[in-house]
Length: 221
Length: 221
DNA sequence: AACGACCATGAGGATTTCTTCATGAAGCGA
DNA sequence: TCGCTTCATGAAGAAATCCTCATGGTCGTT
Image 1: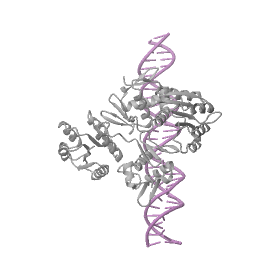
Image 2: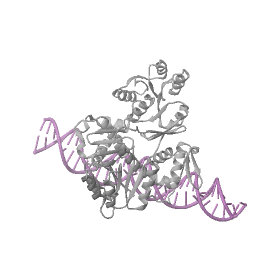
Image 3: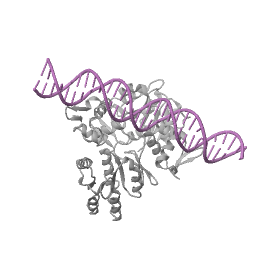
Image 4: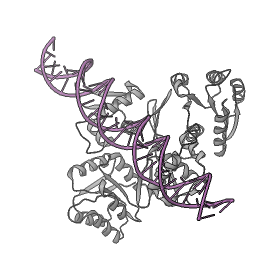
C-alpha cells in the first residue's frame, strides 16, 4: 500500500499532530495551509489520500473538494470539521466515498479512517487480535484475555490498552497517551492517564504496566 | 468447521435457549442435565466443544472439568457461572484454554466465544463489516455508515443493529431481540426494544426498520 | 536525612447511556 | 365506528462511565 498523504490544515498545532502521527505509521506526508495550494497539489494526482480541514482561510475546504471532484480526481478525502457544523458536512458528502471526523479527534480514529480508505478491498487482512506475552486483546469484541480470565473493558480502557499493545515495550509519555486516546486538545494538566493506567492495572495485573519515572509508562519488560 | 456441541445445563429454560440458538447457527447440539452423564458423554470425544454450567446438581461442573482434563480430553470448554462466584471460576481455569461467562449472558456473547474456540487459527477469515443496501456496519470500529454519513452508536444500539444485519429482511420478535441483545432473563415486560428501535431509526432513518404489527421488527424490505 | 518532584489512589461530581413509565396515536377486528 | 390491542415517543430516574481533585506515598537528588 503506497501511502502519500496530503494534509490540508491551517492550524499549525493540528497539522503537525497529524503529520507526526501519520509519519510514525509509515506514511509519506505533505502539509499545505490554504485551499488554493491544496487544490493545485491535489490535482497532480501524486497523493493517495487527502486529509482536508474544512475551516480554511481563502478558498474553503468545500470548494477544494468540489473542484477536485469536478476535475474527476478520485483521490479519497477524509474531512475534518467542527462539531457544530456536522450538518453542513454531511450534506457535502453526498454520494462521495469520503469520510469525515469532527474536531477535536483522537489520532487513532484518524489513522483507522485513513487505513480504511487506503485498503481498497480485502488485501492486507486486518489484524483483529493484538498480543503481548500471555495478554491478548480482541479488537472486534473489545475484550482482553489472560490465560485465566476474560476481561471486559470500558471504552477508555480499551483504547489505552490498544495503544500499549501497538507499542509493546516502548515507553509512552502521558502526552502521547493523551493525544492518542483522548484527543489532541485535551487538558494537558489532567491526570486522566494516571487514573486509567491504574484502572487497567487493576484488570490485567499491576506488573504488566511499568512506571518509568519522569517519562511515562511501558507495557511489559 | 465441525460443530458438535455438548450443553451441560440443568435449568431447562437456559438449556433450550442455548440449544435453539446454537442450532439456528448451524451447530449440532446435545443437552445433558447432570454432571455424571455430562462426563461420560464428554469422555467419548464425540464433541468439538462443551458448554458447561458450574451450578449442577450432583457432581458439580468443576469436578466434570477436572475429570475431563485428567483423562487428557482436550475438548474446549466454555463455562457458565454465577456472577458472584467469578473468583472461584477464574481460579479453576488455570492454564486451561477455556473460557467462561457469567450468568445471565447474552446469546451473541456465547456464540462469539463458541466460534472463537472452534476456529483454532486463522482459517475462516472473520467478517468485520456487515452490509445491507447502502447501510454498513463496521464491527471493529463499531460505527455504521450510510452513503452520506458516519454514525456513532452506543453499545446497545450497536448490538441491536448487528442483530438486524445478521438477519436482514427477517422479522425479529421482541423476545428474540431481548434475549440476543439484553440476555435471556431480561424482564420480558419491558419495552426497551421499542425504545432502542426508535433510537436506531433516528440515527439510520425511519424507513430502514419496519414495524410488523403483532410480530416485531424487520430490517429492510 | 530532607526536600522536591513525581506517582498512586480513593472519593465524588459530571456526563453519558440505559431503562422504565406514562400518554397518546395508529391499526385491526367486531 | 367503536373498542381494544399494539406501537411511538418524550421525559425522568437509575446505572455506568468518565474526569477532576485532594491527599499521601515513593523515588531521586542534594
